[in-house]
Amino acid sequence: MNTDFPQRNLTRDPMSGRTLFNTGMTGVAFLCGALALLPLLAVLSYVIIQGFSSLNLSIFTELPPAPLRKGGGFGNAILGTLLMVGIGALISIPLGVIAAIYLTEFSSGKLARWIRFATNVLSGVPSIIAGVFAYGIVVLTLVKLNLGSYSALGGGFALAILMLPIIVRTTDEALQLVSQDLRQASVGLGATNFQTVTQVVLPAALPAIVTGSTLAIARAAGETAPLLFTALFSPFWPDGLFKPTASLAVLVYNFAISPFKNWQSLAWAASLILVLMVLITSIIARWATRQKV
Image (cartoon, rainbow, N blue to C red; front, side, top):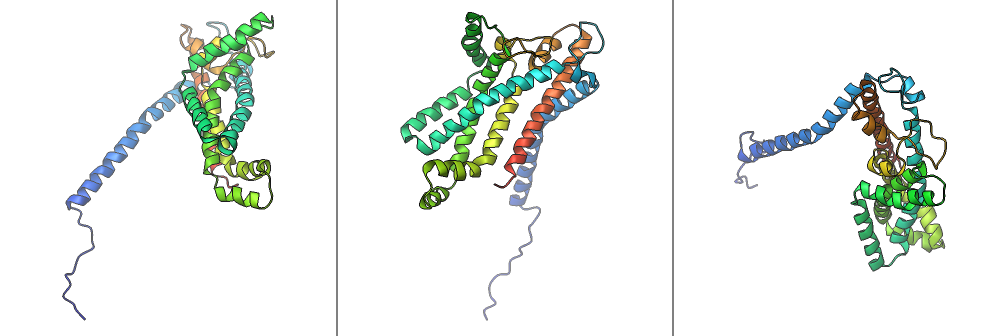
């Protein structure tokens, strides 16, 4: 046997140039990751510190107090936020999912590209523009019909505009990731296109669709500008879809800039509740993606 081959040591030399460069780049990447998390941690910690001291049971069950008056809460704003986000979800989720199904399963290539381009443009439209549009479509229409003006319906419509492109894009991408073999196998077994989509493709893409929907809901829950044009604000409990309705985001805006300490304290508490609502929806989205269909 030839034993003239040079013997090489496979142990990594900690002082070699390659090892030092790899260690340095790993440290730089870790530092950049820490710096990216720093703003999030700073915001969360500050909101928790300022808002937790103001939390109590009454904020969930009582109405906003008068200036300089102790106590009170913002139960109406929590209920109004859930109401308007629910209206937005009822409008945008069915439309978004059906639109994505049409794009992926039934549309032609050129038409699909134009629709996707329009969806991308809509996702980049500032939220205040969506509020102005909803004001012109819903609020002014209600005024002409003598049904009211600012309302929860207008706020939900504005939020639906913001949620729709997110749902369309995420659902479209989820449906495209479903293997063509599943579609061909379903058709080969005699299923119609409708049966293939509803019983094979949609269940396979359901976790990603739920993720996109919950992320859209999380974004809509924190919007302020569209609601200033459509729902405005109310110090009372919501009592109809055609009347001004309170929301957490607008309450934070109104109370945070006020000179009254009790209102500022409630603004911090509302900020914490709003952050927790967004966090919970994000956790639901992460949980949904881990589930197996």
